Length: 383
Image 1 (spheres, helix red, strand yellow):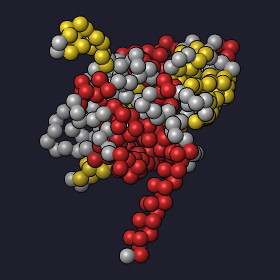
Image 2 (cartoon, helix red, strand yellow):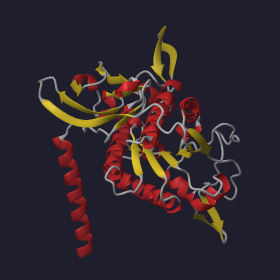
Image 3 (tube, rainbow, N blue to C red):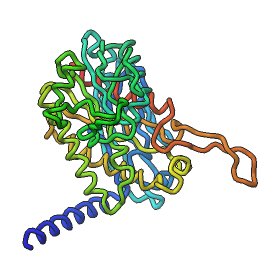
Image 4 (cartoon, rainbow, N blue to C red):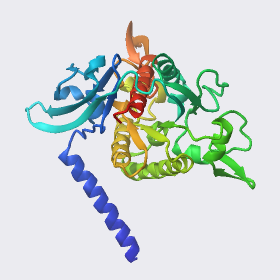
């Protein structure tokens, strides 16, 4: 009985702390430790992506940075070669009564365009359907081929189970952190039947990244691993279970990260912070009818990003850092759209977003930009 009471007390205390934190920061402003950039490529911080509000237009944003420019919906910056370095970035947010409701800061780090260009490195991309779509992996391959470094893309396929040609990855639609730890179907024969990170040991699957490296990486641990998961992990989580569910997700992430580190103690691991959904509920109605709302999923995604920044930016996990992909994607303009009648009595056409969590090509390219800038930072002599 005493143990149960103690657990309940701790749970209530945790919820109270979380509630107080939210009340002190009603917009739940979240900024990554750093935003990475490379000369010649635009980097953005989309204002709606860093707060939790059903309508960011109700607030006034004031960005303070020596570089870039502030527009209505974003801050943007395309660095010149001579602008490599680090720049403080600050923001203040006011409500319609001109009351300060949130403020925060991060750092813009511009790495040299030729950082690591003479190096040969290996890279393993891990993810769900956003990786399996293979748009951002292909663009990342193109960027590396054009500007360096020379990258060997590791993986078992290049999208949909197709054999790798120029690039490869481990992307699987619908997968979560836990799926990579548990998926091992003896009957499912397609590429999604078994996690490549599991190996048969005396008739039962066990996590074995060393065996994976032997099969797909020439027996060596990758120089770099990136993981972009989270969408499926939190998609259907209910508000009342959100923090508990995310804690369980991160425990699964810790297991996989620990396995990577055991096999490759010098491997740099980048965790992509889960990107926000399409800006309009229309996209969710198109995909999920009444099964999920854009607002609830947005709340889930935002809380996951908060927790990932707290957990993986603390320095507790060796060679682990976060890739701030969530700030650099245009959720209003870079998601798929369809043209359809206004309604059954009005045949005039309007344009509506049509996919809740999968970007259009342009959105995927922005994700590639975030990954590439992170990679350049890690290869830079200034890291």
